[in-house]
Amino acid sequence: MDKESIAVEELLRRYVAGDRDFQNIILEYADLSGVELQNIDLSDAQFNYVNLSRLNLHRCELGSAQFWYCNFTEAKITSSHLEYARFFDCDLRGFNSSKCNVSSANFIRVNFQGAKFGGFGEEPCNYWDIIRQDGVFIPGFTCNPSLYSHNTNREV
Image 1 (cartoon, rainbow, N blue to C red):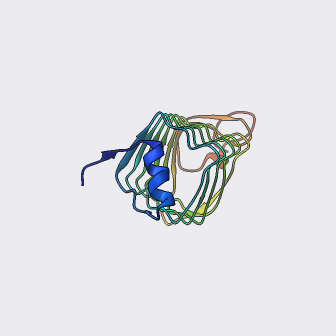
Image 2: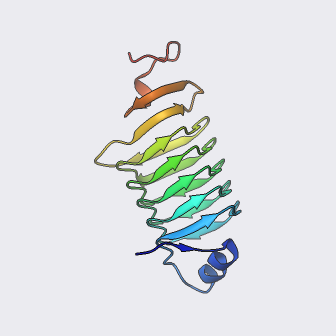
């Protein structure tokens, strides 16, 4: 299926009209800050330079979605599917997630400071060059950033 570029105004208009299928969309240079979306399918969607701060997503499909340079500060995602989602150079400070399936999600150069990142999944997430919730920078690759000590950035 080909990806469809969409404007934020069209996405919101279609959502209000009852459309919940937004698979394979491309949303760029948009502002969805403070928006609340429920039961929306954003599988395989691509978000580039999108402001998602204070966004509230509930029961959403985000499997294999890609987020490039997106702002998720103070966003909340609950009871959603994030399997194989990829976050590149995103700001997740103060991000709050719960009851989300995060199997095999990838976080590359992401800032998690102050985030409450809770989820479940059969396969671990992958992290590269992240800033952990407590502000510690973890260089390189890891599957479990909590294995690093607060003082040395080395595995304990």
